[in-house]
Length: 128
Ligand SMILES: [Zn+2]
Ligand SMILES: [Zn+2]
Image 1 (tube, rainbow, N blue to C red):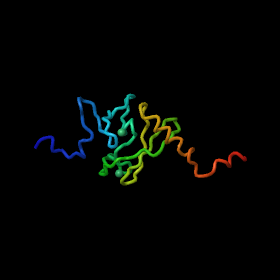
Image 2: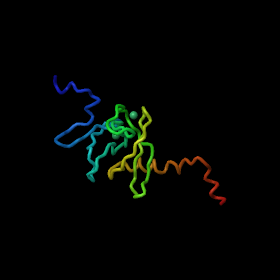
Image 3: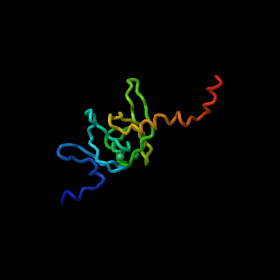
Image 4: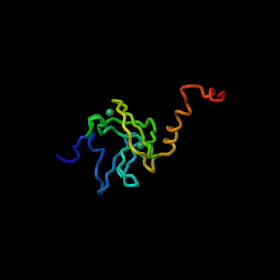
């Protein structure tokens, strides 16, 4: 048996010279698991996709392993931005802190989407 026989599903996270990296499930970017500010990250700073490797409901590892698309931004009472992911296969939702080098264009686009596409006519505010 050689180490090349490892199931590709389980080679996403690997140790390279002591630095943990993972390959983005969407764009293939090699991402350091540690953000510049020292916090662990689980999503790609370029396209913000993540993969479903942790079970948020039951805790521990998830069997799913599918990609998780960034769907929204949430702002905590502390002012920290959280990135909301939804798994494309099982629809589980996760939230993770936004990192300093995350793609700001995508973050802003998600943050303003509810304002850009309101479910009611904004003209109503003009007559208040
Ligand atoms: Zn990516
Ligand atoms: Zn899933």
